[in-house]
Image (cartoon, rainbow, N blue to C red; front, side):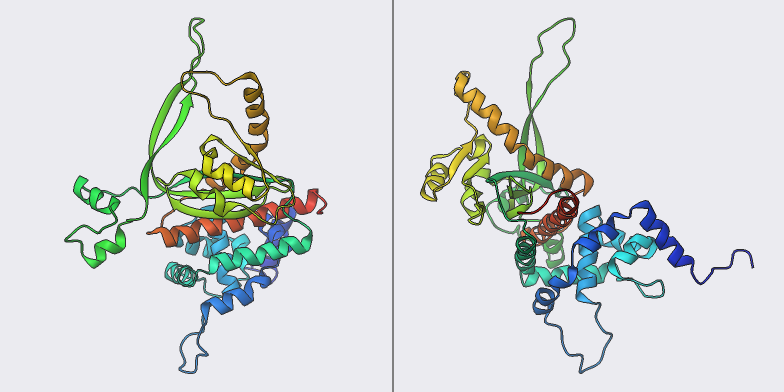
Length: 359
């Protein structure tokens, strides 16, 4: 009968997806998600169900749902819908057509469990061992930088902002309101230069601009050789980049140079690098109202060429993965950004696996 579904229709659709080059199928073939099962099971510590109740969703399957969220910038509600709607998503998580997809609340609760036991660090370290086993060791030196990850802006009075900035909670806030207001994110100014087109032969000048941004700051360390994320941390957006450098340094990197921009050139950081036997490749600051000397300008240009590799990581996360913190509080933001870092490393490994022979 015309219009009647055939027995092999789903298999034919999957075959067509594979022929079109499904990136999720490629990712699943490169990353063995089963290696995370021991970490997930230990973190979740689920009951033996001796008292009955509906069985929980498989831990690895739920972890794959979080990976999908990170890769495509999906909210919990959007993830629920896409799992019901997209065959490529179903195949990636191992969900059959007749099976119920996890709803938004289930996804939220699973991520909360990971946050509660700080499992994201264990998952990241577990994948580090996988990378090492495959030969993708941290090589060539390390590149460090930070970027602001936006969060929903809070509508607060000036007095409420002052109390929160001081580390307190405004009087009169109900328990429900405290749950809905992010007291950890901060405002900061994102500085840059606008370069207008010259008109009527006028000289091209750079105009400094400062854009207010609310949210958190993602601090990353990537290795120069493979450009994989090796260390990371999350702070509020107002935290200064330079203070995170000692915690971001990777002792496993096989080379000594450390590249960073001018924000990291502080006496404390230079002493830390020297004490650890690392070679600083931090860009020089321009003296007030003076130009950099010729040698330093040339050194900055060479260092910027290497350091720019980390900007590609930020660009991928912000634009292609649509990284945005929808959650409330620093602990949850850390899980969201940590999952984005893991997801980036998954896709980077999938790319490396076809192009570069590991060490």
